[in-house]
Length: 447
Image (cartoon, rainbow, N blue to C red; front, side, top):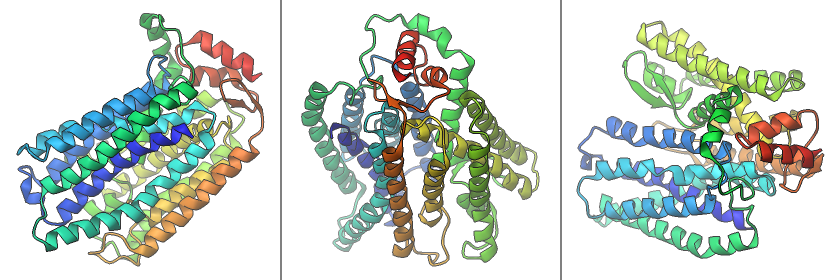
């Protein structure tokens, strides 16, 4: 299955955070001239902006962008920069530069929109993160502890280890991608087929500036910000920080202990309420046009983020910031549901799809990036039971995704898309922005 190789850069890119985190835990933060908080913000901000940018490229379905070539190039340059960090003393600069190349890892989610094997790919994408946490985290922790015991632990050694892994990924891609492209062109093309080579880019600009395109831009950015740590102004700091809502929101600005019952209830409430609202919205408003639902979810997300900023700028009470989390999560979850429905070749979200998304989101409550469960102590980064619960829920998501794929009805066109009926033309516009010829071909083949 050639598209599976697209997982490798994503997994390797995700390991970057493990290396940085383990090195900081081992006491190597002093190697940074910047303060830990400042260096981490500089490191993460460009990465998440690039995620949003990459999603836009993929959603616009630019015909001349080859995902395989883009992944290979970005991963190669990023690996070179990782290895350069073993000999260059100014670690911060290279860290910032190579974080910009996080586009190599961010490309992978967009491949889900290509159809064909997207159901299996979506399942693997859902499963890879908790598997990486459960496997890579303890392994790297053991390696760092061993190196520290031998008094040879250093940034250079960790970067060298990470760079060697990157070289292995690059070699695998180099040898596998040419064969994959010769077998099937659709598995490595963002467009899913080769578009007209001489297409005038200026003719695409008016299409990109249309309302539906701008709505997708807003939704894409909101989704990227919700999946990644979310930017918000913190009331007591008055500076832009990246926090994963809502857990780190309360960790930073609340005086409650993270093991306190009230802290956990306040942290869980936005997730649980938003999932209930999501289920109601998906089932009640499924007959509404796709663009209307996208626009509504986009407005909810952006209004929530704007309200967070306003509450901080004007020193409003903490309750206002907390309430702003709700529209942010509702809007982004609905957006993710719609995008996931496209990825699974099911045009309209249904109850099973809602259950799939809800399960995957609930699993974050048990993961290190979500709610801190009662069974984790203050000095414990991740308890095996918490990771086990996360992995179990993610595994259930995989099963649900495969069931969705198996039960998906409709007619499949030559491009691998399924249409369940009712909104084919609009679906073509959303997925083929800027290419009227391709849009008409999808609609005709889908019907």
